[in-house]
Length: 240
Image (cartoon, rainbow, N blue to C red; front, side):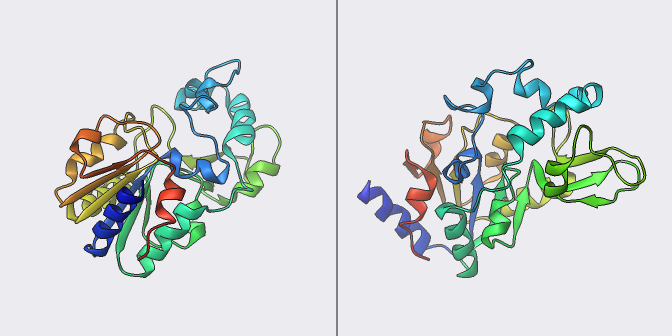
């Protein structure tokens, strides 16, 4: 492992346009469960599977049940940024990292101090009335009962991309632009099996592709460097 950390440090030292692309594994060290591991959300038992509950059609047909699950499992508001989030903010401040692209909805990259963050799947910290567009915080959603409603009577919807919904066009354009211009792409904490997000790697034309993930991914053979370990433990050893 020491040799792989040394290789990663060399890559960082020689780059001034690094883009980071991360998934659920970036936040597990903050205590937020991922979806596909042994103890992830897909392996927990509910009346309906999580991928069904977190769909647009389920939200429309079973709004109350959606929010019961959402408050219970998706609003991890006590979570704090971990070593990976902090290091990425540090690399950006040092002029090494130009963008963070995340599939996570927890807002921890922004909380850690990262400025250029593309949240592909939205954020639990943004919630709007479907009628008047009034903004509500995640804390307000967590404290609400049943279906959260606005002062105007409209239903409040989290700004998270549910199954059957499209990614935000502006966010996608920004992420694709950052990846296509990157010198180094570090991909971490993601199985790279969920599309369209996993397809973003095809836009990378740079010099070095680094993959950091506990388990093997379909892209390991394409990478310059592959490290099978926890993201925070790896990045905490890197210096800007």
